[in-house]
Image 1: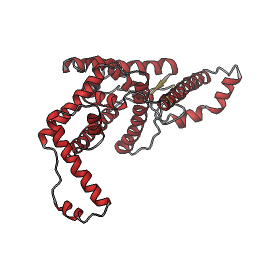
Image 2: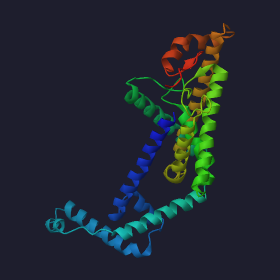
Image 3: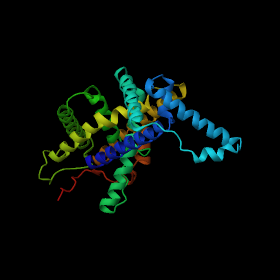
Image 4: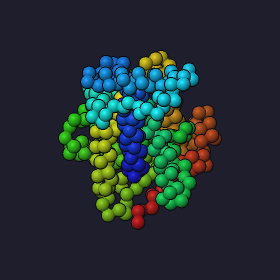
Length: 321
């Protein structure tokens, strides 16, 4: 599981680096969403404003001549386009970081941000886990965690938990962030594994057989991986993701997120009840009401085996070799 989380983190980090590169190109040409946002908020450094105006006016002249089929456009095309210098681009990057950090200092992630993070992490984790299984073992295995939808909620809970706990550690020493992240990840794996085992007699992963295993669900190598994961998430990925999600600006966004939340809650409750009835059937307990009869008929053992293909119910997973 941690391997997949590290892949998710690597992709998130790649996303941040790509967006930074796109922003840098936009800054050099005095264009792009990030540049316009700085200009709209009056955050452009004064020493850059005049140079940026020159770049923008030149672009407007070229576009106007091209649209009007002006003969002068042929000469304009041969002339080099004015651009901002590398030092000016760096100054714009610093201005953008200052705007972001100022915004982050005056907000705290809430319901809206956490729902989006949960949804994205749950879907991304599922896709990457299935891809990893295909590449590493040549198996196509459905690894969803809920009865409806392409969700693996453990990744969603992990991303939200990291964000919630590490939010106040954004400027803390790196060693402290690493230690807290390792404890957090190990606690999440241990708690999830124990609950699945105790409540539903089910297992989805095991570290038994590994030389550095601490318990069935915790190993030293993965505690280290959780520490690295949390450190990069806290310092690089999380601030950028939260800033880009932003706050809801219209009612439609709130309605969509609320509907997504309602669906996820129903999905989770249905999943828990399905596994409850699975445990009852294994114990020979018959249904006592129409709801339980419906669940037993629609979400029977065959459905659970086909839907949760990586899950073992009623027996132990094979030790790692």
